[in-house]
Length: 461
Image (cartoon, rainbow, N blue to C red):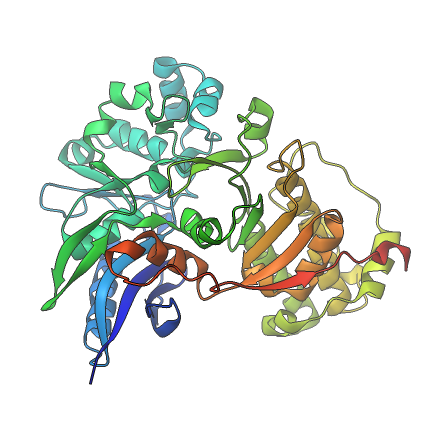
């Protein structure tokens, strides 16, 4: 019996760790997944269990390779960014996989500014808001000052997607989609590592830079295949859209972070935009992608727990709740508009009294309206000034949320808003990135399904 050729993609999120197998038409054929608890770093702050992660990668790949009905032709990796794995000469981790949400010491920031000058200027040049540990370069700087022994033992600091690639292939690489993601490493004007990175000698701690289309020959558990070098998950999620669409669009990639990505906005970042959490990514083609970030998925998760607890409901109930324009109109009439000069990271709902709502349905509509108010401010930051962009594609968790999608469409009445449905956008993007290395067919143009949401004038009900 002919074995089915597949590509295996590791999709590593903060919560779920998956290995997905796609056939040559990029249809999912198998999924393996695992979850495990965080551990604590030396300061007692939660962090990824790097040893458990390493063993899980080996275990999941062995399971995939053991399936007799498939032949794994290639493997690639999509993972969250802003996380560095520090490895010694033998490829052994020299430090924990620190959490990017860990507070950054003010004294280290002050020391940095004393040596390298204004963070505001550096932010503009590297298209990175000042985010502490969310700036991977600042993680590396902190290690170099606080833990010089760890720093000296570190041969390579790999971003998480490239660490996964190293585990399977044994090869060390850096990739532009990770380097160009709010790291403060990349000079977007000169298209190279920033001068401060070289002054600190960090370029010697970063593995050789390679294009994310690159693959190497790998052997694992008696099987041979092509191994990619990994892609930052937000950039990976954009790849299927860039492959299929050439007219301007915004991709709103939703998850823990909701990131509005506009690959067609070439306007330079301003200081004001940086303060509002705008940044630039580098696409898999190496071109700047203007983006704005919002911690809306996290906010939704926290407030949903509050609603469910107060009204004694299961959180799962709200996944299938349908948009009620009458409820929304009533809430809109009752609300007092609150204006913010900058996007906020916690919604107005955080300050609302749940006793003011007659039901969980009304409370949830109010939560989603507050989140959409934040989302509108965030997405408008990347809309090109000429307003040539007429489409918003939404993928990820919120694309299946009927209330979110209807409210978003009503917030952008001059644009076409679509909920996009495809099998695992980040994983699929990572697969498409190395298409030519394993797949003899042309790239498919039907891998994304869309649902159109019309703007609803519920304000007038």
